[in-house]
Length: 349
Image (tube, rainbow, N blue to C red; front, side, top):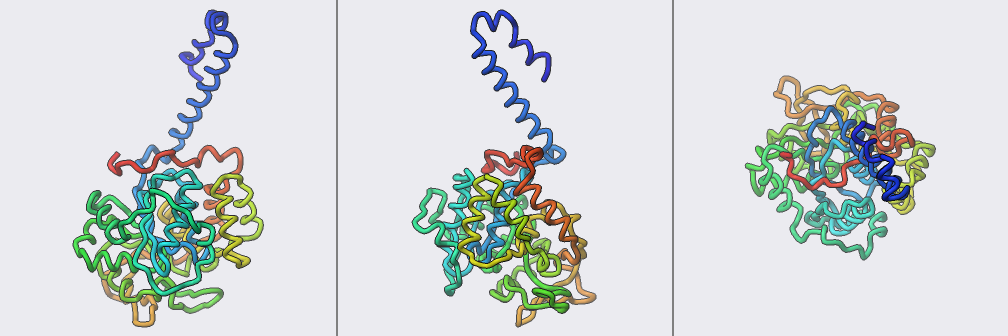
């Protein structure tokens, strides 16, 4: 506390206005000091990274855990969410309710083109939910408008099938020059699902192979988190409970969605893509030339020009240490990772 702050506590102030006013001023000073502390602990005073999130939230549980990490990361400025695959409107309601529960009621959510029915048990949590943040614009038009408004400044975090992005690039090929980069969860290089020691066709790629081909041929810089660095990220019961018991609305939302999901152990595929954007040193990466074959395999083409930076190895413990420090911080560090109150600001500021 500075000397300028202490001047308010003069004997004259206390005589004229009483101890109540002095106590009130004390609280204000402490609050201002706390706000300064948050600002001082922002990463090197760097400007926030403006992002858009494209997600198939509502089928697997990892999308919700990824959204939680975004909301608990002050480095990121979430400008909007788009949903993809299956009942995209129900997915949009789920995303909007999760944002609303976390106090982020101004972040717009746009649904993509509906697809074939898929399991979406978690969307029952948001049945009947309505909010002005649920846009009438479809996802592709919303993405197009955002990238046109802020050309070259927005990172797209893609944690579902690449349908919306493929449709955007087909509608407006010039959009490729307006996207700063894509950070995505998808693909499989040398490892597959479970303990497979060989690659598998990964879900986000195989669900829309033509769209994936369009995206990888677009020239947009891609940072890719494949199964090689995600398939082993099983959230233990102890860490899961730590998140649910954190007391914040995000923890309560995740607990409710976990119960509806109905499986024992979440694998945090999608949060790794977000974590990689925030902490690139969590993974060993390499520029590679990726080709999508007709079955949805992400093949490495030797001797070709790289079209993606691909994460190949990680330390799961370091990932979980980072993730938990954000989403379920211990009491003494909770203030450090509280995100800003307002995230719908001009990315230039």
